[in-house]
Picture (tube, rainbow, N blue to C red):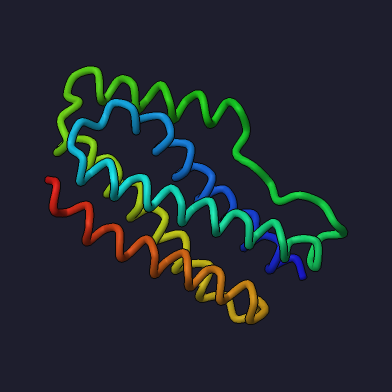
Length: 143
């Protein structure tokens, strides 16, 4: 049970961070194609977050999944601001999202290797990783 909760919490954090980061930069993206890719990725994160919230109570007594704490959010936002202050080109934005997406893939793959998680949790993790891998390919176009 603990492995399922941990996997769902980590998945929730990854999807939340992805969504938050996209929300933060979306207004600054000038390229319409890149903006559409990021909007679609954000929608997929939102759908995944809904699915996590729906099954989480089965594993953790109706509690909510763990969120990213406000300090982590602030630090991520400041780091992004600093990187984009110097260069806010579509290429740089794409590069930053590629790096973040690849981190999500790595964490997701690690969690998928846990043989103690339920099929439903495994399925959500697999969906997350596959989605991330698809966006890596889409984001490469903008480098």
